[in-house]
Length: 69
Image (cartoon, rainbow, N blue to C red; front, side):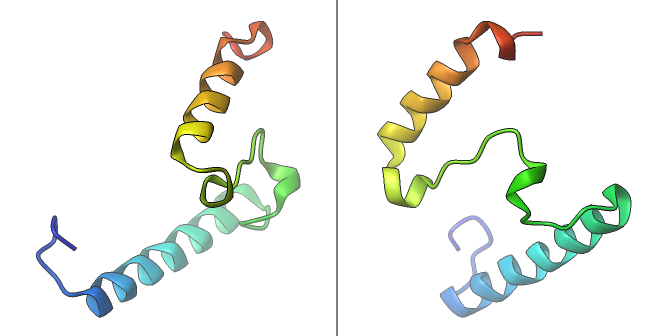
């Protein structure tokens, strides 16, 4: 809202529109369904875990040898 200088409703609508575009793009170019957890390498619910725990988990995951390329 601050970055775009818009009100909450307009920000909400903007995010929904962008998500719809991303979903269509992803579905078209991958042949998969957006949001299907089986197509993700790693999922975490940051809203449930909190920012600090999410950062800690991501850091630990990225330090694992199998994730290094």
